[in-house]
Length: 66
Image (cartoon, rainbow, N blue to C red; front, side, top):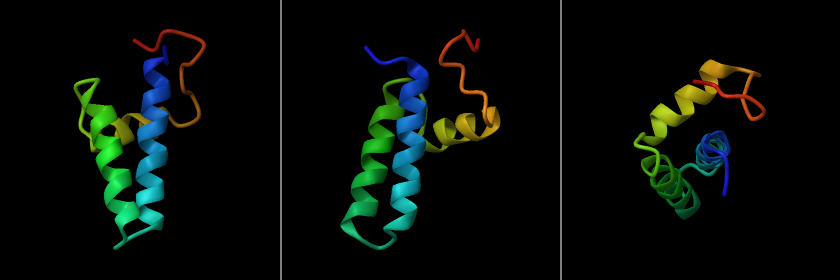
């Protein structure tokens, strides 16, 4: 099972991919996947990305972030 922080990283990465493939089917698919993964944690994709950006370089994989 993945750590919840791993899913935040995946959503962040998918959002970056979507930005790189603007106006293509890849953009749509990346955003759909990001939304699906974020939703599993009760978040929107935008909220998940914001959480990653707020943490900066501290991603909490080795400790409890709460």
